[in-house]
Picture (tube, rainbow, N blue to C red):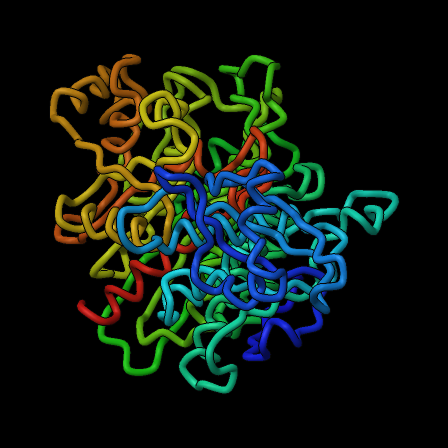
Length: 502
């Protein structure tokens, strides 16, 4: 993992393999962002002209490198595009620029970054954004590579944020927080990126138990016998088709001075073939990411513990593999859930909501004030909102708090309704309701199904991350191909909001 430190050394005297500056994209052309002054002076006031000659425009996700040719101790300047802004540069623009710079500086062991300074005197938010982006952009997953990446492709091993005072206590605390967040997101990404033959339910549960134990959490793992005894018919039903049985993980954190109890739930389908309602072969390999919600919840729990937040949080994480084996559950089966509710299964590929139903029912037995669930629940989320914006459903006021937390963290969220006519589509002639309705409003139908298991009076939210959790395209900003870690940062912002405001 890349190390994050602070420095207040003058750039002319700083020894690093590269220094990152910000470049703004304006109507009249690109301009240097604050923080680049010392570099410009060292290059005789010709920095901007040189960058323009190389084609730099300051556009988002653009990184243009320039050799200093001995004018500075640092051999390379990397100008990271911040895009166009009316007024101050946003924290998310800095986060993305920092990530793009880390991705572009392979082979540069030590990188200094001025991006916290692009609005002048750095705020804690800017320091955090520059640190987070730098670390997340430097993430790599190479466990399964037989040979290490060549030196010129190795991500930076250390990033130094240039700040006015490296000894300032608040700035040091902010940098430490950025590192903790990046560590949690990296854990989430690692879990998502692990091949499904190595991350089946029992192994996923074991890794969650190890991570939780290391963080000081109380962890309990329920095997298939305990699930049967506990009445978890949904988790068992989905897991029946696999030779690798399901699990349920409960992780608990008790914060000092806590006044609020929060429940977290995340979908942990370690691989989803669709079961009997089997998926098309094309892109099925991406279904190793169907446990992204569970990975985010496990990682968030470790982050809450690392930051010692004053809340009580219990995570309930169901894990199963959805396979079309001879014992797989079938369309037309009726399953009985933890709370005694029965659902007719019309599509075995709508399995996420089936395991989440048991988990939500169990989480509600703890009588939390808030329940937050996240999952790669529906392809309809991608159709409606694309690959970078999650859909949020649930209690009206709480849904808006989730969206606001996503906005602060830089993770796109959009509120979606739960219209009563969509719920009617889940009516069943043989059970309390069915697990799917007609095709229209598929994302909303998934939300309605989950709502059936939320105890009245609990403020709740469902975050559908089917697109944002896993990047199948080209890298952008601080996101590489593969697991992104969404919505770990949103969950942290939200939980801190609850801790501070109830």
